[in-house]
Amino acid sequence: MHQQVITIFGATGLQGGSVIKTFLGDRKLSGWLIRGVTRNASSEKARDLAAKGVEVVEANLNDRVSVLKAVQGSTVVYGVTNYWESLDKNLEVQQGKNIADAVKEAQVQHYIWSSLPNITKRKHNAIGHFARAYSHGFAVSGGVLSRVYHFDSKAEVESYVRSLNIPASFFMPGLYASNLTTNLIKKTPLEDGWRFFLPAPSTAEIPFFDVNGTGKFVKGMILNREQVLGKQILGASNYMTPAEAIETFKSLFPKAGENVAFVEMTHDAYRGVLTSQGLPAFAAEELLQNLRLLAEFGYHGRAKLDESHAILDDELMTWTQFARCAKEFEGLE
Image (tube, rainbow, N blue to C red; front, side, top):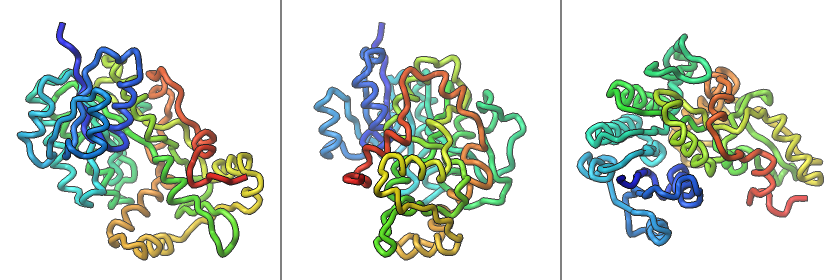
């Protein structure tokens, strides 16, 4: 019997790194050969993976030949791209298609694509808890929000993957928990307190997701292959509002919580903050619309998480656990 091989793109990144960590540490997955794909196999992170027993290979997502070489002989492939490296939707789509084409040519048994909902197009009526086999995924805003390029690009790749009729499933990560502690909840020296800044109301529903838990979902998808083929798995522990996040902050850090509040920013103010930090105007608008999505249409179209959680063996990180350990909150009382 041939050894099963999982090939993981973005091996030194957040999602890919989590998948590798899960495979290295889980007894149910101990028989797998782990292949990590990176642009630079001589980087410190890549060398560290190799020292742990990962087969590290180089590939450039813009080079189809190197991508095909990387996936040859794979049982499972985890594909992920990073829009924020280039801020180029068309480039990300092409990179995603390059992986998909390679997966098809290599006759991979299970392809897991890190996808996101299509925000621009109209909502597909057939969507329930899961996107049913070979439907075209979540489409949320009906054109109201048309500039969330890093969502639409991944959704476009998902549609392409479905058109290839390869055995595939789709992982849909929620809002990274680290975005809360690094970008949205901040100490305000002028007011001597903490503020949760968001260009949306305090009732907006955030799909809380610790990216370090990516591997838990991927493990569940692999161990339940037949159940998840053609479907979308929603990557979130739960839906949480800013108001609930603040209450947790108060309970964890009573002293700091004496002066914590939610601030609903105007759209212009939020754009202004981002552009003042050097972000191009189009990218600032993209991030604004990304956060508007939370309240106006729902990050995942307000789909329930029950079926996605049903495939999991492992407990997911909660906001309470994450906040307690967040380096940004270190030393708070």
